[in-house]
Image (cartoon, rainbow, N blue to C red; front, side):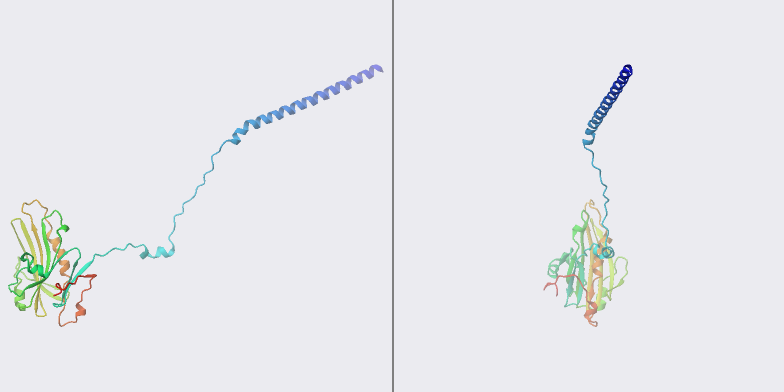
Length: 275
């Protein structure tokens, strides 16, 4: 009996020892796992604390769209083109007007009367006098043989219609041409002369209206003695002068002045030039 109790006591002691060992093993394992977790957290902490690039947002650019009002209103975006200014010469005493570009040079009747070089071709009668002369500046044709390009308006009240026509001559081709300008018929001829390094092309127009002979001369003159300058196109210069010719208006005494009026953006009246 005593032996049996001794064996039971040993068994109990052994079981307790095993339970104690199991508990210690569990504690050790738990501690190890805990340490391992801390180590893992410690190892990952620098990663979580590192600076990460911020995410970039893509922002779409929306171009401004025209509103219906601006899209339909083309005049709002149209570029205004400035028209060249024109100057109107007007002689109320003789009922004649013409228009010329503001860049051209205007020469008064007084200066023309005192300078023979500025006077037009003589019509054969002392009653001829020049009302106005307009010249194209040399700057329009730089580095060329261009010397003069001019328009003159003259009048003669002392000759008849037959004398007015005969004052033209025949021109180089022997023909007298006709052209109607703003309701008035003109006769005209063209002549060309050259020599000594100079050349000239002239067109003379006449019309007998209101008992007077109205005379218009268009001239292009060049000078190139040494032949070194570039030759200007005479026809091109003449087209500029023709532009002024086409604006000539002569008020017929039998018609109302309102039907023959020329409208211009700029006028240049002077007491001397309006005679």
